[in-house]
Image (cartoon, rainbow, N blue to C red; front, side):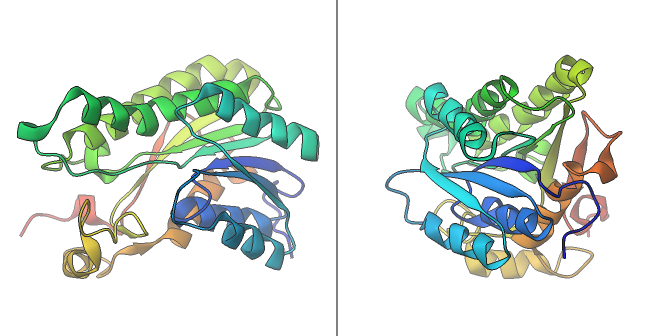
Length: 259
């Protein structure tokens, strides 16, 4: 049964919808009675049809298409697909991102620029193109990270810079789009078990996540479903007077006194 949070019949564009938080969010919207358009990056190992099937199992509808957030045309195609298929666009969630380990001694322009082009510029392109057709009174959310959004992270300066930039971008767009009733917020996920964080080469990996969980007040790392529900809240009528804010979803990690 759909919830009464105003999401019934709404349409969302979700970047990064083939896996992780984006995939979980498409399913969360289906449970609330909303439909979605998700992208997948050609060549990605994740099968976007898993998202489509999971949404359909909840009684929703999900359209998938190839789109690279480093291309404004591809981002615009997602927004247009929502209008063509569903006749409206109410929500945009920028969840696409990459993660690469690069120590400062090895950081070059290519590594720096490619990271920012996806993790920061990709958010701008997504929100710019959806704003062209979004229903007044809509909502946008971007995923930042505890790395950059709160903490620093060694060997990930480019990633942290991009995720920090997302916060300023969302605050400014909240002001600019406010007259249209469009709310813009960000979430700051803490340690969330996802395909990205399970990558031991570029992130913590399973062993690192398990070890880190003991230092979190709730005693564990979070799930993509928990993060998706926080995003769903920020795009629902339950948060109708919330804009330009950052919601930290970290199990209390950032408020624990260091031991």
